[in-house]
Length: 282
Image (cartoon, rainbow, N blue to C red; front, top):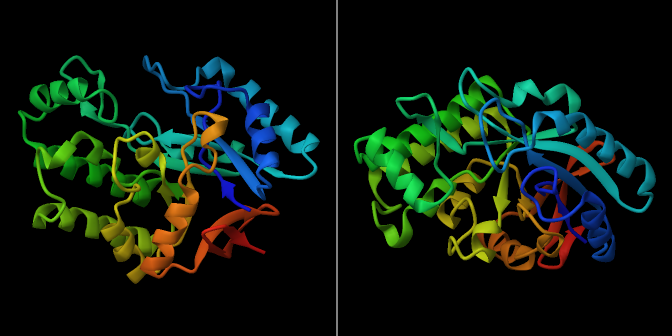
């Protein structure tokens, strides 16, 4: 059996209703699941939940919790961190857990936040207009924001830690072997280890064919293992059919790296479960 705490329903940019995910999870014999719609923001965002839907979102999950007797359902959000605008702290009291993610890096001159994980053309636009085509400055700022989030508004789970790599196809801008990049990653992992925050091993990039590896990359997972950073496996599912997409392959990778446990929300507490390529072991 598996668990997954990163799922997007039609309350944001997901492609199905919550009940469809619950039914799929039941069919797959999953132990527990959590919904994590993109949190509302105070600026135009096509893929975020609308603020007027937030109360309904919470109520819908509560109803599923009450009615789903053979699977545990938990209430989460994927919350952006934008200094002075939004952070996991804004929603923590209403939820069972938070996923903290960086989707925006700084702003255009007109005040619009710059989205860094959307279309590559939009990334190139901000790279030029905000950072004068300095890719090192962009990526360094991305990890700096990640650390600021962890230090000031630590989420339960750090979301897709190195997702900015999708804007570096075929190592167009840099190699992950470069010293400056590895230094930024190591500084971030050191803080994660200090705070004992869970990092998700996110499979979405693989099945979307936007990345050949998980978020984070395997070499980062090795750094994390050396620092005893706790992990959870997630698929960042936007459709029920992806609820455990690439989980067996990712579990095999993690075992090769030396991980023996994944963290699962079970009976309202985060617990470390042993696992293999067939799922978590109870």
